[in-house]
Structures are given as structure tokens and as C-alpha cells.
Image 1 (cartoon, rainbow, N blue to C red):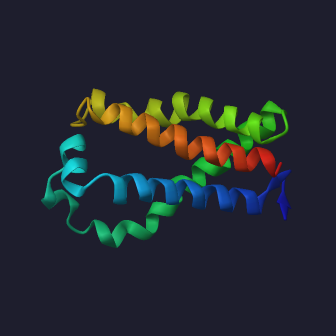
Image 2: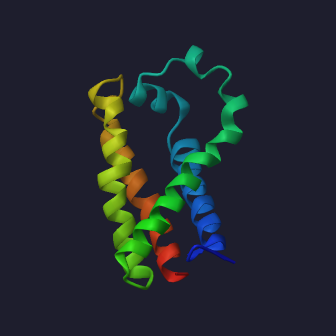
Length: 134
């Protein structure tokens, strides 16, 4: 199914892959204590967060849509071109926006490589999917 030249199924799969990778990194590989140390979040601030968990699919979906747009505009077919577009967008937009938490917030310097790796892996994989299904 296509919408304005975009493969809707590929966007959904890419968003789910981003969501799954983020779950593995932030829900399995990094403990809650380590995450709190990285971000400066307290246990009290995390209370009630479970109620917002269903909204967690929104950022990956928006990222997948944005990646689909970038890949279409780049006009280079194939999974490798999609991967490269995903990596570029990961650094320039994902990680770029993520730096606000360090520059103006409470994120520790040790969180920067974790956050960068998260964007590179998740958006790179999503870009490869979108490029392959273009």
C-alpha cells in the first residue's frame, strides 16, 4: 500500500524496528539505575511513566515517516542508500536534538555515546528497511 509515493507497510515496519531496538537498548541492556544515572532522572520522576508508555510508538513512527521522506528526496534506491540516509539523519537530527538533554539538561556525558549509538542503530536499520522497500 502506497501513499504519496511512500510504502506505508515499510514505514510501519521501520517504526516497529526502531521501537524494538529502543526497547532492547533502554529496557534490557541498560538497567533502570544506569538510565537514571545517565539522564539525571529520579525514581519519583519516573512514577506514572507506565501510563504514557503507549505513546512511545509516536516518536519512532514520526522518525520512520521523516526517514521515508528523506530517502524519497535523496532518490537513491536500495537498502544501502537507505542505511546511509538513516545514519546521516541519525547524527544530524536524532542525536542533534538529543544533545539538548546534555547541553541544557541533566544528561551525563557518559550518556552521549549510548544515545548516539541508539540513533545510529535504530535509524540506520529503519533507513535500510525503507530503502529496500522503496
